[in-house]
Amino acid sequence: MPKKPDWLFRQSAVVPFFGEHIVVITSKKKKRWVLPKGVVSLGMSPGESAGQEAFEEAGLVGTLRPDPIGRYAYQKWGGCCTVTLFVMDVVQLLDAWPEAHLRERELVSPEEAAARMREPELKQILMRFK
Figure 1 (cartoon, rainbow, N blue to C red):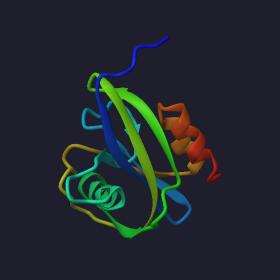
Figure 2 (figure 1 turned 90 degrees about the vertical axis):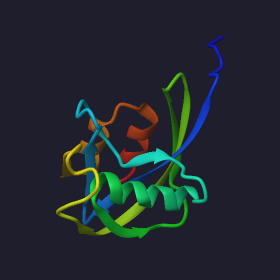
Figure 3 (figure 1 turned 60 degrees about the vertical axis):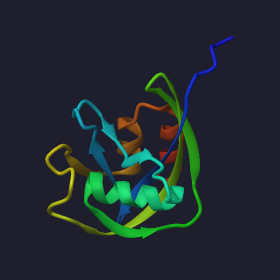
Figure 4 (figure 1 turned 45 degrees about the vertical axis):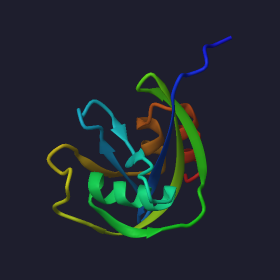
């Protein structure tokens, strides 16, 4: 039986749609493609926190749909991160944003977004949009 993680971290993320495309970004070290996500900020709902991450990490402005579309988990920081996913309908891609110097941003098809993700549960969720 696998060892139970010592720490549980609550995160939220967006699946940002700009038209028919999903906006993906690189991790801070630019080693892989990810969706905008982060630890849920104190005083914010998971959705509000996900929207803030979309702005900071990807320069996205849009409308967040209120209901989560799924969850997935992965190992990080010596514990388990559980991520709640929300859809964002992007209306604007900013030319400058807080983490622009740390990340790249691309618009890809849902199939391509799924192919670039590492987590199997996240891949399955993204494939629902094809």
